[in-house]
View (tube, rainbow, N blue to C red):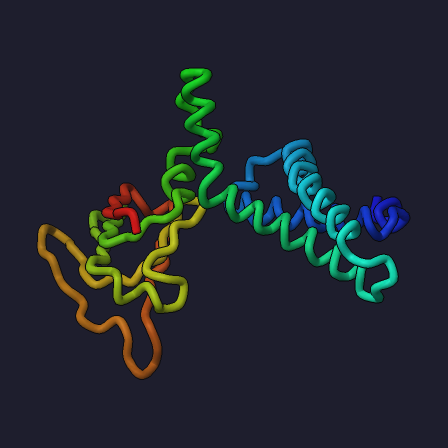
Length: 207
């Protein structure tokens, strides 16, 4: 398989790489349930964009220019990644709404409701509460100061795990606040495996 890829022309290899980079950027965090045909089809879609930009670049760059191929290759990769970024930020949701309107189907294409929630972009979290099987509730609130810390204010894993900067713990109806998140040794973040979680409550708003 790899030897076959290496036998392709360098132009086709560049287009293929550009298309795959577009796939990675546009669908990062959503590829777990993709089949090989899904990956190939999406890569091809972004590859078509890359091919168009590549051909247009060659048309507008003088034939004798020494860096002609390098510029065209760079342009097609940038175009594919840019298209994927726009798709992820804006077009995907619009496309899903159109499909729902046409088919009256509420399926958004994600495997779980958790994936739908966590893949929503353009949101700012102000409070996260994680209830554990042992009855404790770990809370992070007024989260804006944590946005610049490592991993951001909260990390919601694809497997249902959660990592956050806990500043309050409720146990047996007694709420205890934790005043120190950061000190001279660093910033304390708490990782909670999915199998220990009963419920996750999120308070968030559009940025």
